Length: 311
Ligand code: HMG
Ligand code: MG
Image (cartoon, rainbow, N blue to C red):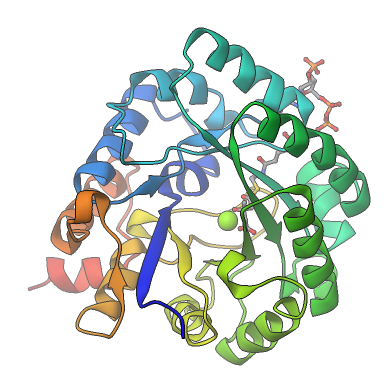
């Protein structure tokens, strides 16, 4: 039997903001966003990325954000990175500021077409790169999480063979990733597809090491979260306000909203783990979603936030 405790990885400050067009979001706004999310009880908040600033300009200030957040010992503040250059930049920062973070996430995909758009290399090329990146990160005492994008649908090559998602996830676990997050990057997976994909991946990776990362383009993300829980997954990535999208996944919208996941699980057999044993505060997360959406000049995408606003 699986435990009933669900872990939320809040990806709003990274996935949520990386795709914002127009002016670069000030470091101060990102820092406030992260600190507010931690105050609301979230235990893991993805801070940003060490990627090429030419490819993803919104994440250029991540080192500064890491330095300015009001870090708490019971909270994890991972950053994502795709290559040696990203790890070198992080390690240089940690050399002078050792306690800024103890966790990274590396990312690759289930299809070559998406990987080329996102990382300018094939899946195998990126796995070769990540092999040494993950080894060095582990040697330096960092925890490493992995992401596999486009596990169900690829915006460039269509329906994905779940065996590719399975094999890439297994490679990441074999390298030493403690967990692999399976991404419906385009946000069009249906619950039964999530179930079928998970059953395939579980043939090679224990479900305790799997997380679900669902974008909500077609409105199925909350249903997909519940389906993943039914299949034994206990870690879910979500973004406050339903922010987000990958710059190299055309037309895809944000992640499942953290508010919507919290609401869907209220009163259920599942409890969401909160920092210091406190529950994650739904009302506070709704307020943060409204605040950051206002900063970005948009309506919150979360249906729960809209419903609460209209009360
Ligand atoms: P490239 O152009 O092939 O790389 O891009 P390059 O090695 O030729 O380098 C180009 C320039 O970038 C060089 O600088 C490098 O030094 C620099 P220049 O000599 O021109 O001045 N560079 C870097 N700078 C800072 N940090 C680095 C870095 N690497 C190279 N790490 C590259 C290849 C991987 C760099 C590029 O494709 C890239 O940065 N891609 C990242 C794309 C990205 O961040 N996508 C969004 C995150 S993934 C996601 O959202 C999906 C997820 O949410 C799950 C899901 O939804 O499925 C995780
Ligand atoms: Mg994503």
